[in-house]
Length: 372
Ligand SMILES: NC(=O)c1ccc[n+]([C@@H]2O[C@H](COP(=O)([O-])OP(=O)(O)OC[C@H]3O[C@@H](n4cnc5c(N)ncnc54)[C@H](O)[C@@H]3O)[C@@H](O)[C@H]2O)c1
Ligand SMILES: [Zn+2]
Ligand SMILES: [Zn+2]
Image (cartoon, rainbow, N blue to C red; front, side, top):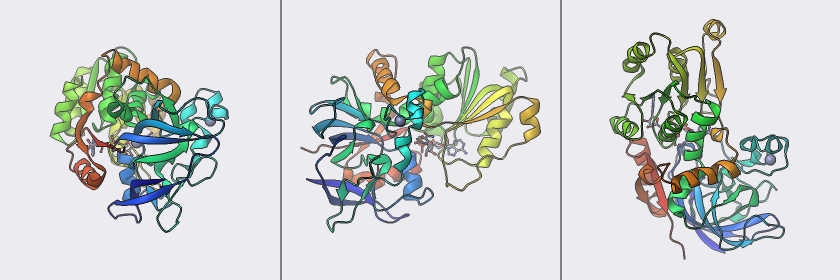
């Protein structure tokens, strides 16, 4: 079967829209027709060559769609089902899945290799070259054969375009606040970066009952959105935020700081560390070059104040629990998804979508696919 797809052939180059060839789904595999996909910053790290991936690769990992065909032994979804695909699969059997940490499932090992957990490449270029799929999904395409472990069935009355965002950014940002940072009622929280992830950390902090929610982002548009979504304070720099945090916490500092800026670096993690007080927790969600030393901290202050630094993958969430849960909250009018989408793009416009991200224009850009 043929499918149009946005393919990264070389790092640093724009994505190319090419016709690719798909094999039918094998055992444990599912053919999905994508309806929409969010544009997440992690793709930009691969496109820019900072995160090394096997190329060629079909980009995109925040998608939803309709199941068209299933391979042998697939029981959790059937043709016609609506699915969000989690950017991390959950096999349900490995040590991490079995202990309630399926965001760390061992089947996630091939995310940047782009083949399925069973090692199979299901897509090829016209000349027969095997092409990988970002996070084993490659949502910037009309169709994909993915692992059943990546699919999460959702209620079929939910809008599939907005649901796509829950495949990565919504769940990661919300979960960073609620699960990883474990924000408690009355906490003071600082959120660095208010893009597709950061705005959902704001929503998570509101739901968790934070007293003060500080957002720091250099882009003025983002600060306005932050306030609309429930932040109590929004500043364009650490220097502006610091005296106000000191004042409102009576010198104690913030309880939690979450780093969700586009690029992880030692300056931002240092600022997050400086803004937290005793037993403060710093959560690092941002990524950058795989060899970048993006955490450099004064260890004496870490021990004397009993601070801690935590990594966060996919909001420490179990996809099969958290994705339907967030969508049910949206359905009940308790979670904002519609307001996250600030521009939509066609497949041919995908490179412009990423330029807009770099120019700070979007909370989340959304690729809308209308393949028949
Ligand atoms: N750990 C995970 O599971 C996971 C999952 C998805 C994405 N990510 C990473 O999270 C990060 C954010 O992704 P996104 O899609 O929300 O990106 P985005 O581009 O939508 O948002 C990034 C925001 O950071 C802001 N920013 C830039 N420099 C800043 C600074 N010095 N201080 C504060 N804010 C700053 C930008 O203005 C922008 O609003 C990326 O590094 C991405 O790769 C991690
Ligand atoms: Zn993502
Ligand atoms: Zn597993």
